[in-house]
Image 1 (tube, rainbow, N blue to C red):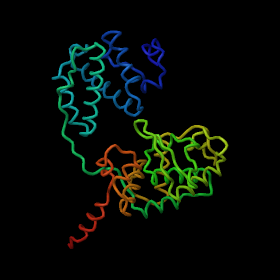
Image 2 (cartoon, rainbow, N blue to C red; image 1 turned 90 degrees about the vertical axis):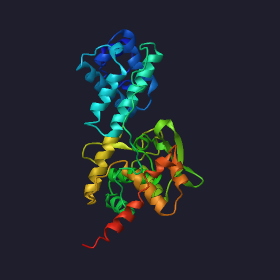
Image 3 (tube, rainbow, N blue to C red; image 1 turned 120 degrees about the horizontal axis):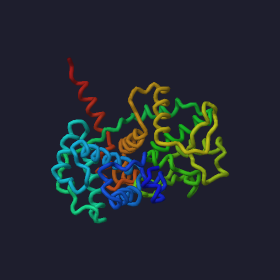
Image 4 (tube, rainbow, N blue to C red; image 1 turned 60 degrees about the vertical axis):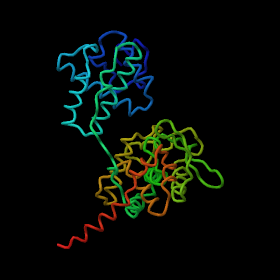
Length: 326
């Protein structure tokens, strides 16, 4: 923990990764305190906090390299030049995220009377229109092969099968999945339900598909989790033995597991945690599901976002290219 944070009694997990204050925000005690308040009080999502902090550090480093060590010296032309240079090495979404981070941070500093104006406000980012998501998607039969290839005679195998099925059948984000407690799987109306706390703190409940119901019941029974409803549902394994710890799986733990299971199943597509969200939505829509219902299950604010996960047109494209008879 940095000296500044220690003096403010801020726990490190409420701040950011290395808790290092970028040079640009060392102008005075007010700017340093307001900087930490922005991340600790204004941003609740840890992933957003981490990404915005890195953007602030990168801009501070850029300013240092050009002799700018005081916030009062930063003008719109500097932010514009930073964004222009960033476009040469980073993708458009990353550049837009950096600009959004600077706008929000400088707004926070202006409200706190640390700065007189927001130098990022008038700067325009690159245009970026997305009509189709880039998340790798599995066909329904591939997803079934993946689940069937998992060794369900072991506790870790039962855990992995249940977690993958949860993401596929409920369209859950990995953060919501690994954050579940045992009590978040419950019976209502004679069938299993799943309670998820999704992005932005949105909590919603989804009925479990009969396959997911079976997988969760088998896993919870084998792991003897029923007696401890407050325990995390998906926990890490104890080394190479078939036993679980009390520590919840992280997103990176789940990613490594998914990649390992894909290799074992002979799947060459470079899938990740988010693959199952897109796979589930696409399979649902292919089977006659409605976009507005998929939106509700996925807890999306807009059906346009849900539509980015709809990859049904991929099959049409593949059929068409096979007509090229050379």
